[in-house]
Image 1 (tube, rainbow, N blue to C red):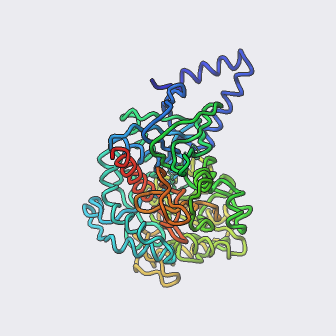
Image 2: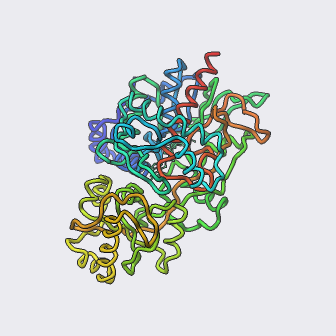
Image 3: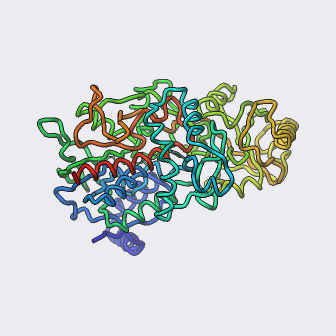
Length: 499
Ligand SMILES: Cc1cc2nc3c(=O)[nH]c(=O)nc-3n(C[C@H](O)[C@H](O)[C@H](O)COP(=O)(O)OP(=O)(O)OC[C@H]3O[C@@H](n4cnc5c(N)ncnc54)[C@H](O)[C@@H]3O)c2cc1C
């Protein structure tokens, strides 16, 4: 039986809160926690904590994209599965993902006449990662990407609108049909498939520890569920707890120069899975490789998606000038912004672009967008020399027409110029975004120890693993990572249970 936190329940709580003051604390806390975790998450049903069994074939720790993909694949592989999620809602950072999911040689690319190849996807990711990526994992990722798009499509999650992110030469970032952000759509679709399969999903279930036997083989987890500590046995445990981008102590410990940066991550991204696995001897890789994203609104830590630049936006300085190739990789664009005297910049676009990148509506609703009918008025609003801004857009539109950016060498996101008023700008600067390092795994998603040997019964997938992205993750590759390796973890672990 599912426990439904319904509107009726919330209304009853509010009435009771007036009558019984102590209850209002519960009502306020649960609302604000949910909102902090993932804004815009829709109402969902979760399993009653009383139904937590003493043992399962497979326990999955963390209900983001990797966890839900693993749960679906494990269930379809015949295993008895449960998901434990420490936040009050499912979704994790996956709910926040915006630009899309990279994949090559997909049916949607072919239908739209986009020429791409797995080799090109591999080479460009390797170049973006400064040739430090784990090449076996990367080959697995690109070679299974088209199939992952088909797998999602077969479950009603159709990513057929394709754009570009920095460091990629072709359109391979797949997003929902209407061009909106990928995260909410993906999480809604995955969770619908989880509930359809009746996979128990427990929220407020904070996993604290991995249980092991005398041979250090994993036998289950210790979980704190709604204030009670319980041990749950499992034949296999899959860790999908995400990265550590919201754990400032861990970030600064691994990369001291990031002290004081804002983070785009949800509060559940604390590195728990990495620490739990390290406690039983797991090896890590690239822990100091922490990505800062160039376009984060600083007062809200809200990410302004790379798809906005992919659809044609430019970056200008406070002086109203372009200063870098906006479609370079994130590390380079971030460095260029930090090199500006003011250490921030503006994303500038027009009203036609707003139609192509639907997430801009959300930014407007959040009050992050400055808009004006003309470029002169926009410059005035931004306290920027108007003659510079108009000259910058004139020059940019000529580059788009010529198909060549002489000044900075940009080659993608140049299909449309910026000439249709009203015009808009969003002030941005870099913020902590993605932790590329984490647990060392093989292509079977087995967690490896310092000797390179699998720790028995332990698997991991998603942002808590390391190596796939090397020293710089390409936008759109993390969603590919969580779906492809989440699915692989569920498939491999359920096959091992069946043996
Ligand atoms: C704002 C934003 C935009 C992004 N946009 C994109 C994009 O467009 N394309 C792209 O490829 N990537 C994008 N990324 C990166 C990508 O979204 C993440 O890397 C990816 O979603 C991580 O998925 P995951 O399943 O590994 O972790 P998550 O989705 O973070 O899920 C992990 C879950 O585990 C839970 N958990 C943690 N510890 C415990 C514990 N001890 N017990 C139980 N549960 C626990 C967490 O609460 C969380 O719900 C974006 C990231 C952010 C923050």
